[in-house]
Image (cartoon, rainbow, N blue to C red; front, side, top):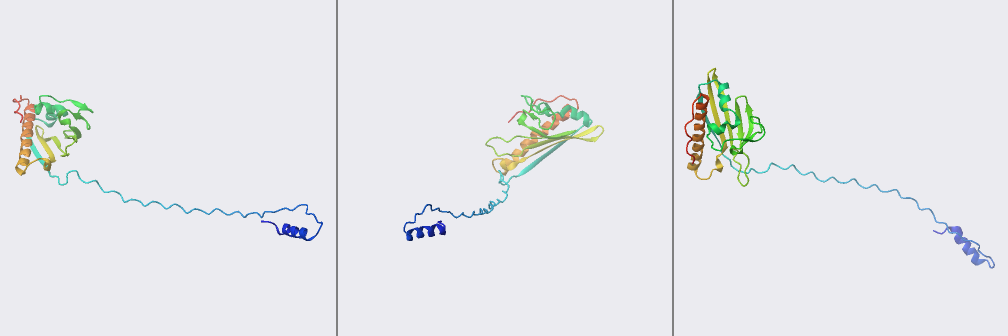
Amino acid sequence: MIHARAIAALMLAGLLPGCIMVHARTVEEPIASVAPVASAPPVPAPVAAPAGPAPLQVANPNYVTIPMEITVNKPVKDVWARIGKYCDIAEWFQIATGCEITSGKDGEVGAVRTVGAEILVAKTEYSYAYTQPVREGRPYNLYHGNLEARAVDARTTKLLYTLVYDLSLVAGDDAAKAADVERRRTAFTRALGNMKILAEGGTLPPPAPRN
């Protein structure tokens, strides 16, 4: 912007002959500084609602239990010492290929045995529970087994074996499912009989033929 006095000097120089304007200076008015406009705070993104649980792999499971037991004429401590180690299953289930611990320490939670790749998931002084791992391409049936030796008195012990699994995954009709339960019951009842024989100092009979 040109200052008013400079404009007046120019006009006067034009009106007065012989008058020489030596210097005309323009003065720029200072521009007032503009305070920065504060930006609005960012609007927070909407919080998504927490996701619900994933759907079940098996929509309508049918968990069955198979309880079995047998009485042994020996003290509980002696019975468990004879049949209660995690790989003793090879003897009383008469598994020809034997049993080895592939991971962890024998008798401790987390141990894995070659029989069914079964994982020891719980234990007490005279019991343990195990499960089988998830197999690729196969729905998980939650199979668990539990073996317990329970003192009846100072000289008598009750052995209890319980299986639990999802029967809905067994193919076929009700008769096929019932047959699966009985097949397992027969095999493990025989195993309990073998435990009794071993704990009482006897010799096992030949193994039953495998189906």
